[in-house]
Image 1 (tube, helix red, strand yellow):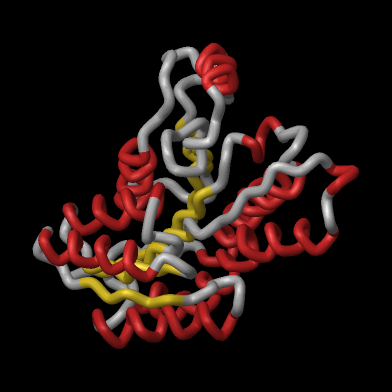
Image 2: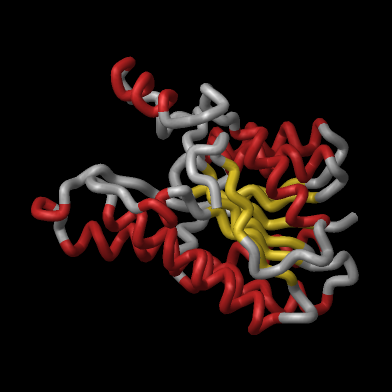
Amino acid sequence: MPSAVVTGSSRGLGRAIALRFAADGYDVAVNYHTSEAAANEVADEVRDAGQSAVVVGADVSDPAAAQRLVDTAAAEFGGVDHVVNNAGIDQHVYTADLDPADFDRVMDVNVNSAFNVTKAALQHLEASADEPSITNVSSILAHVGAPIEVHYASSKGALLSLTRSHARDFAPDVRVNAIAPGHIETDMTSDRSPEEKAEELEAIPVGEYGEPADIADAAAYLRDATFVTGETLNVNGGEDMR
């Protein structure tokens, strides 16, 4: 069976991607940092779909932990065919109040983790016979910026540059693409006030939030789109058209 490593897959977008890959016939390495119970639930759902799963707790911003994640997946599945770099954190802080340590931490988790996992997995991907791919989960904010999330938006912009650079670096052996989600209904948006949600929805031409399944669909497309590399798939309901 082909296999995939999906970072940050115990909840939200990562969970939806992991389950979509399982439904499509892929064994999945489910990665978490703090939510072990949730990760085990995702792994059980992967197995219910008829696929193998392994759960690996790892802070992939640490290169050694990222290597352990990939090594565990490769040992369990006999290789790694696809990687989805989804792990990320967010924080709402105005620049004047932003601690440089918090800026560094967001960059570390959102950018360095993708580099770490990619580097750890590269030799396995290059050896894969399954049209191997890497998909990085960025954000609409990489394009439009954010007034109280400058470190988050900056990290997601850097992730797009990393995507394009790796696409050139690894061609023709491994395709590398990105997804830039808009407003998606997850636990990261659950704390929005009704006023904030109304304002956000007014800016989305389709008039509703996206669902994690929309991002999973995009990840599945990029996994299978063998003539697409170095691209960013914008999934935002028309909020930012480019």
